[in-house]
Image (cartoon, rainbow, N blue to C red):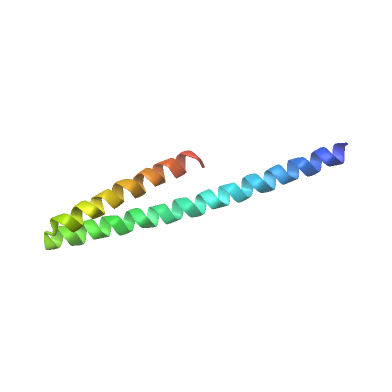
Length: 74
């Protein structure tokens, strides 16, 4: 009985650790996407390309929202 509970607890800890690692990877990817969107915005500003800038700003908003959501779940 005790061993079964210990095994269950270990499985839960392992699952939690896997979920945390996945969350960290997703957060890192989202932060990379934010940086990429910021670079695109800057390049578009330099070229004064309105359409690309608007697309990049939308990508930045989406990626930033994902970062915020991911950080809340860590």
